[in-house]
Length: 464
Image (cartoon, rainbow, N blue to C red):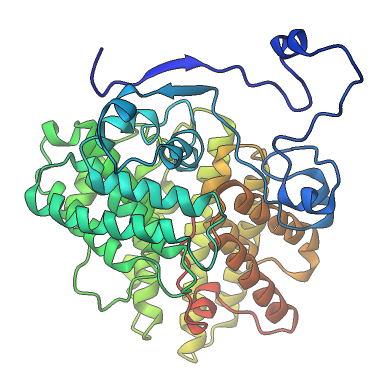
């Protein structure tokens, strides 16, 4: 048997409220007892009412419009890892590692059955102490819904991960995807802290440097390496969600030429995190970067660059493997267009330049795309893992909804709560708070671009 190779055995997961045949045979005759809820949410338990265990948000919490702190579902497989018990390795917290494998890692992919961050990652965990500690830190915070005061064990594990990562990078002794995943998890842990303006910038800049080095060689040999593609794809998604958060004067930017070539060579390769939209993520990241550059501080617009970005978003196409993923991609694409058009309007208003006809046409288009984006996202079932990737387009489109769109506003509220119940990241609830403020301002006749409103609050929300 391979030393690091995991062995799997199937686990029968009974449906809520049912017991297995084996349990029924072993149960002595006597009065029937009411089965306790295994997956009931904390809110129903606190009220001492029966939870229907609907996931990620139960019907009672949904009716009341409150956050549902539901329990993540177990995967259908559990892993037997003899090396965890045979190795004299005191670094491993078996409970936290298993929690990652079975629950937390599912939030990083669109299909839990194709999840390189779960059991397949064990071979890298055994080679990288930084990755092990980063995983254990995230797990410790996730199981407690990322509280404002992070658990001591989560902080301790994060500190160990940072120390180990420095050594592993300097010695170049670990696989590239183990190093990159460690960096990304450290950024996620930091962005979930109580500091609203901390999005893990130093980790993002480290990831940029890592990717810039990786894509210097754009030969077929490198770009066909699945480890390179996994890392590049993770970075593309991360960059899309954070490009507008980075101050324009930061010295270390991405090597857009080399990354563009690498993305082109990846083509429609299916990334387990998001599928076949690598090029779209790259375009949207460039939109976010450009909009931030012209808005804070106010700079002259680059009309040719704007036209190129708009054309790229308008013409982008792919063949999604299923309708729900097609809805997600359309939401991403229109999020990019709304972001670009709204930045244009905000820049025009800040420059005191008036063109009523142009502004009216853009506002009409923004409203149309906003409504279409929300409708696309609502076509995706609330039980889908695709929800983990909806919060950014939800914020962009939701912030444009007028008071006449009260039904769509309610749907956005409910969906953000469901996303929080699924991945437990506090940024989802902060995005909902931001939306309520933006809707109040819009209803008073003073609409605002959500990006500028967030920056004025000195927030830097890492969504997605």
